[in-house]
Length: 419
Ligand code: FES
Ligand SMILES: [Fe+2]
Image (cartoon, rainbow, N blue to C red; front, side):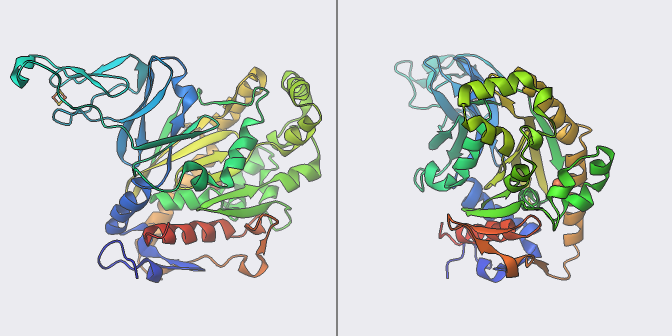
């Protein structure tokens, strides 16, 4: 039996249909997760459009660790640990900016935006000639898919394509909503601090069981059809892609509706420029794209694409997580982008109704788990009616816990060192 840390047997805490409550509350398990998941497997970091121009930079994170994503003067993207090679100070304090170099505020060491050490004051203190063989530490592996930048702190392991598997198709499905085939992450980020374990958030993103209850008030006030997508009558499905990734596939409902832009809660007459541009670019395929809309996919462990919003989960402690949220923006589609921003702000902004409701549940969930009894969380919903689709992925109905079972099966593999 492989165990990560003396005393923790993950096979005893994770069963196919139930998981132990200590997984959300034990600081030792959180420390294991940092080593096994956040500092080893692929983690979503940022998007190339956030550093569009040469010498742009933006501060990002890998779990609790601070990294700088830069574009050098030749246009290449770098991910550097935000830690001075002298005595470890934070090198970059600004959230974003444009500069070809960084100067550490402590003793003035300077680095090129590639990480290379450029110089340091009073260099006779180091013998005067040559240059010290030091620099900002690069993140060992960086990979991109459709402009989405992922990183791994492990020098070796599965490739990004292997990690993403079929979840990559969902990112492709998002970018094809742009007439130029590109998403821009330029709407700015909001950060919501939550007193809850990161896994409660990750699991909830594709939990189709809760919306009717947690979001009932907003659905009724807004006269929204979203609630009906997550009911026993819905044709939508929940799918586990393997690798811990999952989705609520709402396309069966949108196809039934058969209305271009119906997925967006509107009709084509409200966004005529966008729709005509899409038809111009995609020809016959445009109808399918405009009817099927945007994905609702959770990419393990921290990227959630929720139709019009992007969430990035950042764990800080066993009971503390930051949700970074922004609106999806489609390149070449100004009229829909304005509406996307409004919809996103309305659901995940400072007074956003969806995120506020979910966050209240996360925090109550964390407080409930502190009771310690009963010890287990039940994940049985839909086991008896789960199927396998033509690609071999587990599929449940809209309200089943298929996605959570997929999450935990991957999590257990990773924590036992098998993935
Ligand atoms: S710690 Fe950065 S220059 Fe000394
Ligand atoms: Fe929710």
